[in-house]
Image (tube, rainbow, N blue to C red):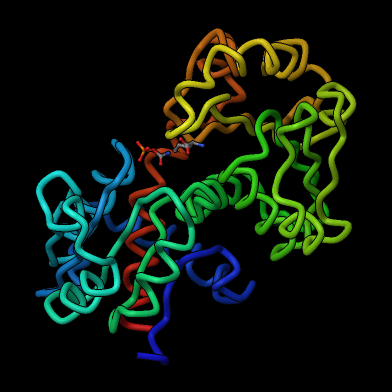
Length: 302
Ligand code: CP
Ligand code: NVA
């Protein structure tokens, strides 16, 4: 069990491995667009456990496995014994004796680390309350479609210090760029994650100051999955953190805009920005497919 590579965090990859994976993602994108065969994972089976909703993650993993010649199973707690209290340790042992790789989307990050501990096959984090590393693969692939390097660049995170923010902090640490984090007080990212990034990440409360000369503005929903009942309170607190034309104007004139989606136009971002010329959100979404295919190959074939 112990030699199995998991992808629970972006930091499970070295910078070299991440760069290699992103190169392969770009190749896989070309192969896919040219309708060229790339069935490198024939007969491999991916099991996907979703304890939260998903559009992009589910479809990209399922379509990706099919395109690589394998197959994917969608499992929800509603229809499996997980929802009736079967321990995750037991589920991990059983599933990993039947399939080649497992993706889990859940709430507490500890659930996925426990799952991985008891799994004899690679486990992929498809989002927890703490991290969303698969999204970062797609976001970084998208960045490199516009730039040769990210080293020394400035990226600004606007909004909640949430799972996406944490994975962006990891990216800054791994690839040596600067992440400014503009979040309201009380919504800071995890202190341990922030401190581990050292000078690569810093909180700058004022969104306009944090965005100044930035090469990329990134935001996300104000209330994540599981925080629905906080939506109204958060809407008041986060109002000054909307990414709008004025905020984009504070950034570099070539700055890109990213959002992992789903988005709420008129809340965290205006329609003008997300549907405007600096937005690369559709590429980000498409690149979930290509970058995760590269991840599946990496974890299954090395
Ligand atoms: N960005 C993202 O993970 O989307 P889904 O929740 O639709 O999977
Ligand atoms: N922060 C969001 C990301 C959704 C892809 C959430 O956890 O709901």
